Length: 131
Image (cartoon, rainbow, N blue to C red; front, side):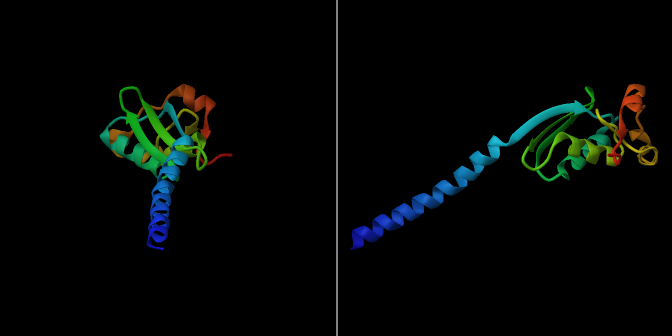
């Protein structure tokens, strides 16, 4: 009887150890990494851009490269997508590859953060709040 209870306890404990590993594996499967243009100037821009990216549910990492003007972001593809992330960034004042910040938000950025807007992006992109 004691051996049987020990075996059951061992199996139950072993099963509990497997559950978290399966969740981690499932999360890794759905992670997508993309890189896209985000305009900005300084360290404050970097903080704002990355914070906006992290505000989107499902974003796992975000790193803006000031010199390249590119954001590398990893996210759970079952929870969000690149468009949602770009819209969140444009909403806080930074033009992205596909979406524009509205003029008021852009001009209200800190003085050192007001970047020169790319005429090509202005021609081809729509505002972050347009459908």
